[in-house]
Picture 1 (cartoon, rainbow, N blue to C red):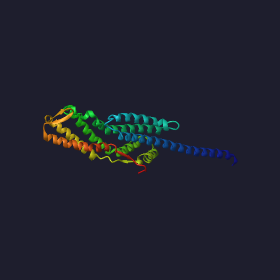
Picture 2 (tube, rainbow, N blue to C red; picture 1 turned 90 degrees about the vertical axis):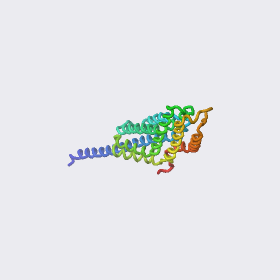
Picture 3 (tube, rainbow, N blue to C red; picture 1 turned 30 degrees about the vertical axis):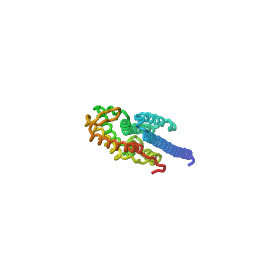
Picture 4 (tube, helix red, strand yellow; picture 1 turned 135 degrees about the vertical axis):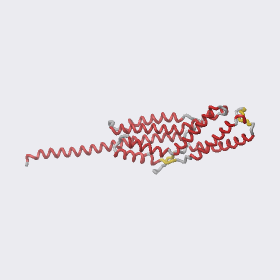
Length: 273
């Protein structure tokens, strides 16, 4: 029996080493899942921070601000991997970096869809009095107003579309089931649970756009009913003047509310929802 003792001792050592190795592997995988989840949570948060900067912008003063934010978001996200990675890159880390890149591109695209037409609408050139009878300018105004109506739909669905995009990218990004669950939980707990849909009102936005569209449509349909004198409209047609004055008054009254809506796409909560 004694001759088997060395063999039994050897097998015991192997068993202990195997258990230790298994525990070490499990701990390593858990740390890797935590890093992966943290990267994607920070990635999503950067996109939302970019939206809040866009919401706060004065589009009449800086109509091209969305371009600046695209560059800043890309730069901020590009720094995340080197800031967060501990040790050497691993397969799921690389997958998470790719997922983050896609989420960022989609965020920039969504932000451009929402805010580029708003910047065009807010620019002085778009509604310059000297271009009232210019057919090219008339067509451009119609296109911008149409794009803004699409922007309003995108703004209303922003949080819903973001959640859908995150779910799709995480599910199809090459992560293990355990990592997908960890990522979803981390993004919700650290980011999305602190935000809710804002008070953006598509009805108010579209009502304002319809008034603006009607205002310029009336002027386009009645080019002989008015002229431009000293930068102001002078009307030959009293009926046209009354309609334009009424619309202009409604537009001026609703302008502040219109721009305020674009500052309320998403709201931050101090307590998790």
